[in-house]
Image (cartoon, rainbow, N blue to C red; front, side, top):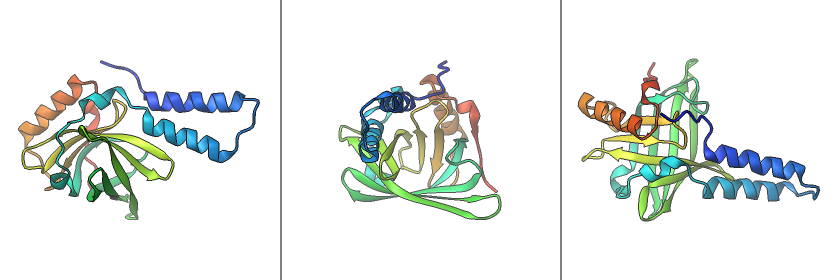
Length: 194
């Protein structure tokens, strides 16, 4: 089992930061942001090879309920999370993530998901900030596009999504075994529903 906790992307960002800090020549902030943006878009994690090639965007769009996730820093404290996707053009989707904090306060964030390579439609680069992209891999989708297994660039970034709010236990078990076999940590998956 892989024990890496830092994705290649974060390592590259740290290297770029250190190079920039040690560089005697002063660079302006826009140059630094451009480098970070390019690095976040061009660098892929080892999990990118598991993204499905035949994602049907028309079937994938719509509202998904987060069935389970590995808790992560960018969703910490959120429950009842949904993700809504829409088609902007053949290689770009709109993304709207919503959820609720324990206080009842809503959280809503909107962005875009870009299909990086038309030959691998399940490999998306998602951005909620103008200069930062994160890897988002559609690893599995069931035959009627009502359940999906989604991975990120590190072993501890994983979701099971459902358009109906549930998943067949046999399918869930199959996907958990698959996720583990490719290096994710599905034993950390939890339900976050109030």
